[in-house]
Image (cartoon, rainbow, N blue to C red; front, side):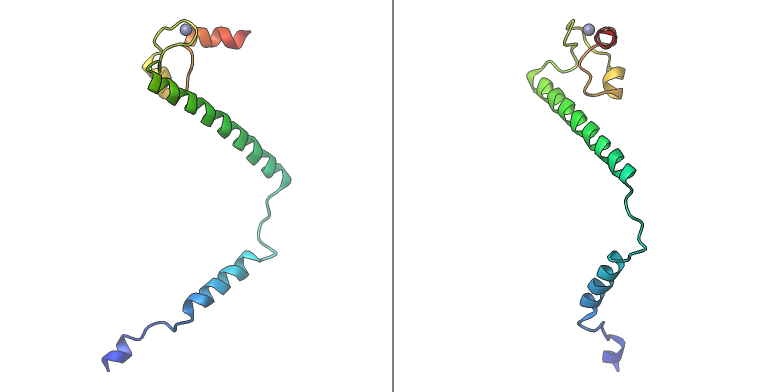
Length: 101
Ligand SMILES: [Zn+2]
């Protein structure tokens, strides 16, 4: 009697779930990625790579003990600025100057 209550799923249940998942992923009506979306995704990946590089440089400066110092004038970059942009290289004044060029 107790065995009836403890009945488990048949041993092939896992395989059937796998099959169902494969069928669902092959659904021809599933929404496809548009060309435009892919371009946006590529741009996003580009930007992420740039951000990753900047963060890598910030980490190097952190280890070198020069993190948070403006690379142009050597002044301390305000903490609020670092909080908003952790990879900031310059103080606000020097950043504006470098972007104006
Ligand atoms: Zn500066």
